[in-house]
Structures are given as C-alpha cells and as structure tokens.
Length: 278
Image (cartoon, rainbow, N blue to C red):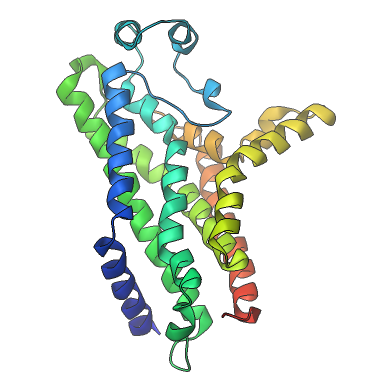
C-alpha cells in the first residue's frame, strides 16, 4: 500500500511541477510578502481581518498613500513577522489551488479512473492525494513564513523582527489546523467531483462559516469567545504569539485540527468509495 501511494505521489509531483500553476502560487506568495514587508504592515483577505493584533490598523486605514502607511507602521512597536503569522489565513486561498492541482485535475481529466484499479484501491488513492496535499501545503506555509521573516530582516529595522526559533514555533503551532483545513478541502474535492463546484464551495467556505458563526452568536446571544475559539482564522491568530501560550489555547488549536482531519477523512473516503468515477 505504501509503495502504491508513493508511486501516485511521485507521478503527481512530476505533473504539478511540470505545469505553471504551482509557480503562479509561489509568485502570489512573494507578492503578498513583498507588500507586507514594504508597508511594514500585514495585509488580510477576509471579513475578520479587523480582529488582528495590529494596534495601528484603524489609523492606517485612514492614510492616503503607501508611504504614509509604511511610516506609521514603522513607528509601531508591533513585530511585523508576528503580525504576518496572525494573518496566515491568507494562505487558505493558495491551499485551494493546491487541492485543485492535486485531485480536481485528475477527476476533471478522467485520469483518476485509470489510476484506480485492482492494485490501487480508492482508499489508497484518497490518502495518497491527502498526504501530497499536506506535503505541498506545508512547504508553501514554510516558504511564506521564512520569506516574510528574512525579507523583513533585510528591508526593515532590526526592531521589527523576532527570533528564528519563535517564528518556527508559531508555524508549528499552526500546522494542525492548516492540515485540518486541507483535509476538508480534499473531502470537498472528492465529494463534488467537479472543478466548478469545488471552487464555488471552497472559495467562500471560510467566509460563510464566519458569517454563520456570527449569526448564531447574535441570534442566540451566546458568548462569542466560546464559539469563535474554534474558528480557523481565530485559531491561527491565537497560535501566532511570541513566547508561551496557554495550554488550553494550544490544545484547542491542535484538537480542532485533528478533529477536522478525522471527520473529513471518514466522510471523504466513505463517499469516494461509493461514487461512480467517470
């Protein structure tokens, strides 16, 4: 089983790196990091960006030019690399493409049926795709983390960066929830079987889930901190703290990620085994 999974992964790696998509993703990461480094302020995509820890964000929103934003951010005591890790939710949109390249292309081109045979079961195929998604996703997260870290050291004042170990620890804390989210995306791809359906669901997934949670909190008058501590971007922010964090916070992030991995894998494999692949 292991050898068959490795063969699938090797073939997919060759196909993915032969194409242009993965390099477009890397260019997008470089662009995002470059903008944040130049402005000395982490940018965010989504509806919960205002919850970041940057105390200057409101003031920066009122500024007219990038030079003004850079000046104000440079006067802040906030560590840029820590702030960039807090908005790592931006990478979700890159991970959408990773899953698209790993599994959706196979299903859309009808090559999955050729791979799955008496020697390669659907379960083996599914978990090979999941492991490859994790591997590529973690590589992209590491590239984004250290590109932002070293770029900040080179181009900004020494007072605006933390230690290499601190940033690495933050990245490791965030990996369980990232793997959980990647598992959910693989499940969606396996269930929808269509690139258009996958993209339509995946692109709005985090935003819709945030809106749903906020609606539940408002309608039922629930303490928002109880529910939002399990939300994807909230977990990323809670993990992105220099130094020690509460054990409860750490366990919440890790167990939520593991829960997503187990639940999505069970649902995804069960459905994929029953679905008629064309």
